[in-house]
Amino acid sequence: MKTKVALITGGYTGESEISYKSSAFVYSQIDKEKYDVYVIDITVADWTYTDDAGQKHTINREDFSLSIQGEQVKFDVAFIILHGTPGEDGRLQGYFDMIGVPYTSCGALTSALTMNKGYTKAIIQDIPNLNVAQSVLLFDVDRANGEDIVQQKLKLPLFVKPNAGGSSIGMNKVNAWSELGKALDEAYDAEGTGQQVLVEEFVSGREFSQGIYRDAQGLLQVLPATEVITTREFFDYIAKYTPGLTQEITPADLRPEQKEQADALVREIYIRLNCKGMVRVDFFIQKETEDFYFIEINTIPGQTAQSFIPQQVRASGRTETAFYGELIEAALLKR
Image (tube, rainbow, N blue to C red; front, side, top):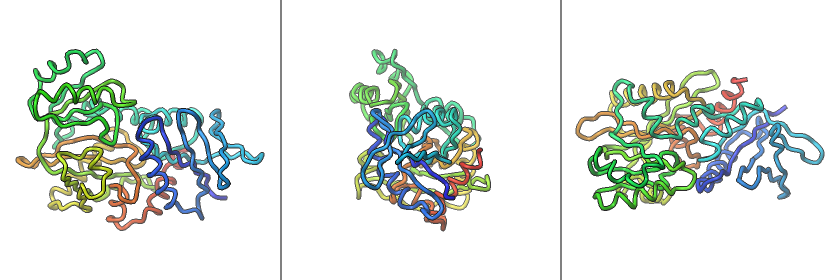
């Protein structure tokens, strides 16, 4: 009997476009001889499965099951590839916890916490040898005087971004105080990001992204890092999703001691935040000091063929098929 996998995609925000691309790639790579995979599209309007004939079937949300031609389909595991709300912020995870369906991602609390960039920094900022940029967290009540608060506490240049959100949507670099108001408005108004804004001082350095996951034996596996070099001022939404604007070097050109330190820090971040499944940690190595600076953690990283994690999986000598199988088997161990 094959393991029945609900491959979850879609979402309630603009990141759904990326979710569909990621889930299509994951679906193409999962071993169909071992797993019976159903792509479940979760939107504000409905939760559905579309069969090979193009007919849609609605998920029964009481137990996350399907009824297809009179037969009930119940899932052994949920493979969550849904970026943004509700797949990355803990909402789906809490639902699955309540109905007893194991899943491949971090738990509800970790997912909710790490979706909030400011709160995440507060948890990891005392990890030895890990630095965080000076920052200010603005709430909705601070909107009217946000510019004054930032100017009193930080110095230019700055990064302004929604405190909850992904794919660099609503993010801007500010080089002059005259640019701050517009950047704050864009961050505040970004869809589904909770009306909170994180403003950070700019750290000049090399940018990296590195994956880590727990395998089917329960062991932590750190993947090779990727260095990100963009022709744009920073790695924004356009740089991420426009071919030719960014060079991604996997594995990154790091000295042995830098690689050892990066692996150790990524591992400690994973443990400190009580992560599960695969996550991706983004960080800078500052040019002047070679200090490591935390940027953010992504608990549902992109999974297209060009995304960081698949690049790193291939660079480690693994195949995506074996990797996704490990994630499914590790999730089943949670039962």
